[in-house]
Image (cartoon, rainbow over all chains, first blue to last red; front, side, top):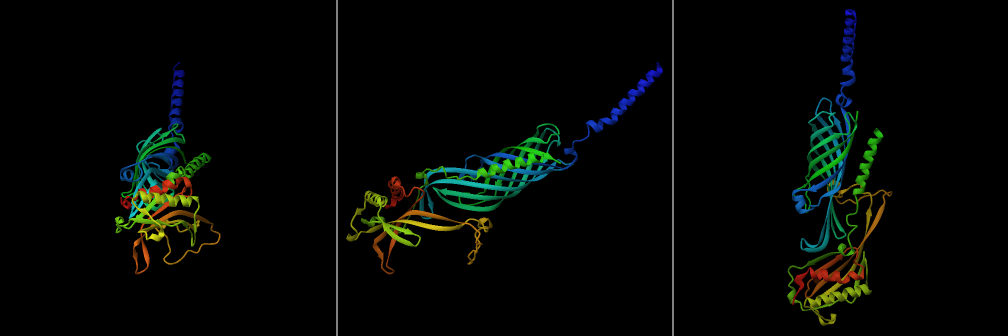
Length: 220
Length: 202
């Protein structure tokens, strides 16, 4: 009896011991997304609301014709990721017929005001939770340039001004993984964007608040 | 998995392209019309009592010119007379020394544009400095043509005898896509006079 008990005890101990050795490999091995610096690509569609003097003096209408794609490097052993983003934003507003003074000239016209921007930015994200957490809130700062295309139409006549202007942004967002350790997820972000551009009606730069929803894919 | 990622990028790119649409395609013909007026700030319109008008419309096409009097031209001239009369001016024959004379012209300018200009205005203005551009012959060109009405009022009362000119005391341009359509003539002429309230003398 004693012998049997010892054998069982040894067996159990062995088994437990075995489990203790196997367990880290099978179940607690960190995900490759935690072990490696990996890539993450995001495509976003944005709603954009003009702010401040840009809204007061040029276009104050919200726009939903905005999109961007970004690619980022999610750094190993760090809450940071860095990357680049290119996008396209478009504002437009129609003003009913009115008269305008252009120097001594009086112009009566229906104005169509548009502003297209093609921002090219570098950004850094700071993530508050781990890389495999299904919810990954982050804050973002970005800086870069914006290819600005100002088109002001008087009736069917247009005046155009194009310029490459510096831009910056600060954002708050979160990634949501579809499943733990998964490759796909949703990205939600609210971002303030400012572009240092002045022309005619735009006297103090272009500023807007942008809400975006996107999908991302990550790989290593 | 790479394929899925590139598909996403492709969808996003298509989204970008579809954003660049024509923002004025939904303008009605009436909304497309633009009225531009200038006047001599030194001129006192109260000194003028009578006016006359040309008997046909001057047609200027690039450097060629001629005259025409189609139905639309006649309607334009007639509407100018009506507007001038309601502002207080007396319509007289050109032979009875009118104080002001009115010209009406239909002007067409044709421009040659180059489709792929490598020096875009992104560089902050056009390069040049006295040199023209030498475009390679494989570049594509497109031609744009623009027409507008130009109505000018000349001061016959105070001619500039030294250099034999009449001062233009007022002019108006009518531009846009509907300017050749007769149903807009009255509206166009009424608009250019309507935004020039300083012409009123009665």
